[in-house]
Image (tube, rainbow, N blue to C red):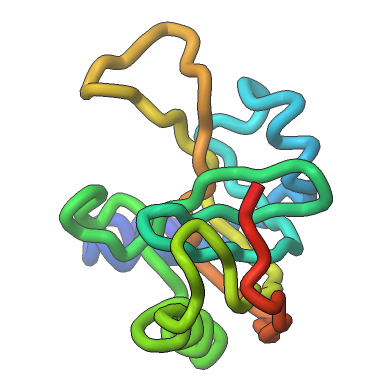
Length: 159
């Protein structure tokens, strides 16, 4: 019996995490994902981009391209389906995008941007609970972060 198979027998949750984090992500760009959405669905990807956070609006962007995000540890939406690498970079990213950090900005505008190398899974967005054969949007479910930095944006309006 090989080690990978025995891990599956011993601990399914641990095995899923090990297998997932053992996969090399596809290094790509936000624009490439937007242009070829169907090619990336259910794939593990890595992008370097800016996160924009405003009231009920979260995305990553690169130039003129943007992609909606979700968080892998959002258990209300995903359960344990998308495990995260809960390390120092992840905790810094979550701390920077939460709480009072964003409150001084006017509605619909971004006070600060956070740049990071993000790894996660591309999944279709289904509107109103329906699952169309050809989804119109995809989202990046963020599961890992690295090289997290704050960029001041002077409360500029989002696009």
